[in-house]
Length: 432
Image (cartoon, rainbow, N blue to C red; front, side):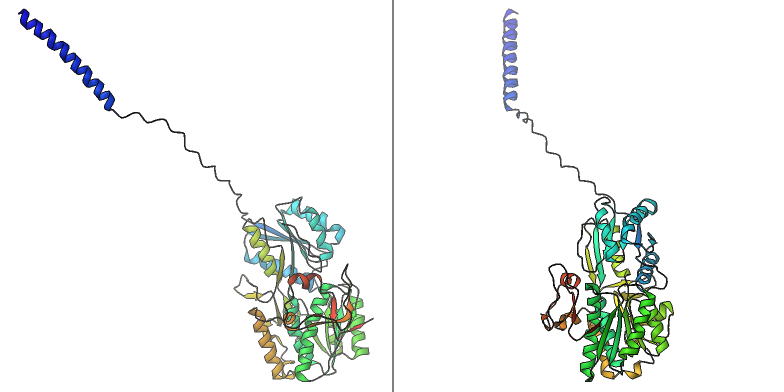
């Protein structure tokens, strides 16, 4: 028994030592606990972008009355077409806005009507909007360009390339005149007026050259955009003293048209289809008009605003190659020749069309098609030779008569056309 007990105690000790050794070995063989790792950096939360506006209110400050005018009438029609196409765009306006009432009207439209885009439809009364642009960073402000090109991120400047359609009108007028005398009842010397008159004059010159005849273009200034009585007097003078048998205007009342009807001479309209839209005359008097679709420019502003853009295009100088699709599906270029709701060569009066040589009709069609495609432009194709008349600007005198300011085939920049084209082209007759 003792022998047995001794062995048992000894074996127990050995067994305990063996277990301890095995536990020690197991501890040595166990993988070490991983060292604590630094927490992964958290990605910064994405900056939440403000949601794009769901609707917009377009406000136009018209410098004149709307009814009975082609300029403000065209702007008014444009805004109505925008509102008709876009269910989420409202249109509000004020008429006869002077420069000193621009800001009060604008702020009133912002506060009471929720205006998001406020446009002045003439430069002299639209420029004050620049002064409040910083005060209302979420509002777009806009002004028509005469010659000033100042902008801000939310102060947009705009004008259509009307001279393209005026060139086509000039081709038609130059071919129609039998006396060789064409008259323009004009507002006053300015870059805007010069651009338009020069476009018309180039068309007249090209028609005269093609047909081998001499044509005079007489310009007499009213001193204002809208002065029906003075416009009438000047139109009468052009007919009675200078023998014009084609009359057009760079003013805004219907008085020159009235004179054309009374005198039985051809009239060439501006800014709107005065036969088809206003019914002021028939195609027995109106040979053709050019129609301005300001809606193409306003649509660009509306699209930028509804997209939530804080950097909209701030100089819009759009021509015949830019279009808008109206609510009824009609695709309209920014400007076009138009008469009695017809466009292109179809716009030429049915009474006038037989009087035009086929070569002129073909040229009108060709040049219009090229401009719609952006392939040709009268201001690129022709040289600019100064007549020595115009409007001297600060640090920019009128070039001396006979000075070639731009060579044929050289494309002038939009900035130069909008801000520095301050002279009449050689050959125009500016009456005192």
